[in-house]
Image 1 (cartoon, rainbow, N blue to C red):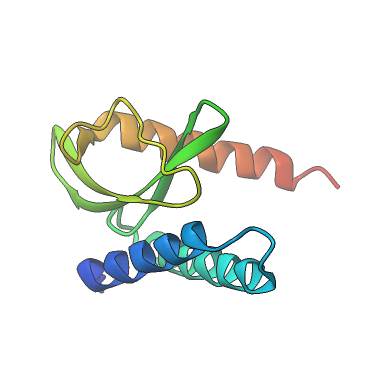
Image 2: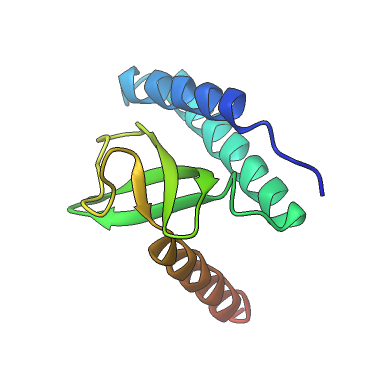
Length: 124
């Protein structure tokens, strides 16, 4: 099984997120950079799914009027280490403490996301 070099990719995504967040919403380049960020994030997520790993998966949690975005970087039996992606309002999820969250919460969230994608992909 191919292992994902997660540290470099997370750092790159965090820098891209910072860049997008710090740009003016009226700047035409903001939309371009925003799309690059989401494409890169989806690429990493798909790579993780293809290798059957949780490491590299994107997970988000609804917070207030936005979402807190994270990348899974290390999976343990009880806790999973995540890195936050500081995009837009830079929300934090209360279930994450010092970069860790219960592994069961991550698995449940990812399973829920997959179920929703399947449900809504069948509607055309």
